[in-house]
Length: 183
Image 1 (tube, rainbow, N blue to C red):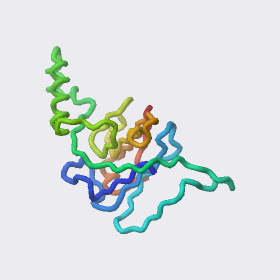
Image 2 (cartoon, rainbow, N blue to C red):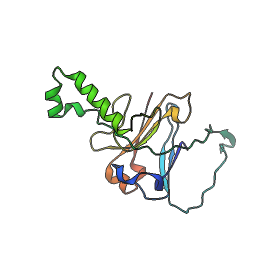
Image 3 (cartoon, rainbow, N blue to C red):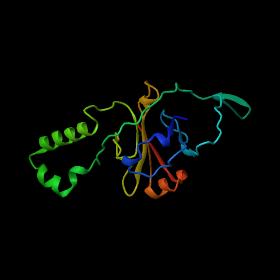
């Protein structure tokens, strides 16, 4: 498990995807390349849970999984931009010879949206991905979560992106999500 999100603590009025109002979303994946498997589960509020040790049996042999130090993250409302925002007709028409102005505009908007500060390595819920390679949130897919490996382990340089359709995310059909890892 790499992330547990308390759904009741999320700022509901700014999310661009529909998530459960309470309970926890549990994210399971490997943050080191390549991940063998990944899953997202919703545990309704009040459901008893038990933490298990980081060992399991495989073909009669005891195996150890990596256990990461627990860290508390706090919601921070911010603005994300579609990587193709400059392709919009108005921006594209203005861009000819004015790329520096558009760069300053983007920087000013993002800085204003984050209260003058920008978080470093983080976990992002919803919005547009800030992918290192090709953005996976295209063709009807939206971002559920983006997890930088360094948010979990300072020595891991991967980016885990989880996408799905708005309909599947709202209906909690997390088995239909797609997982991509970039490094």
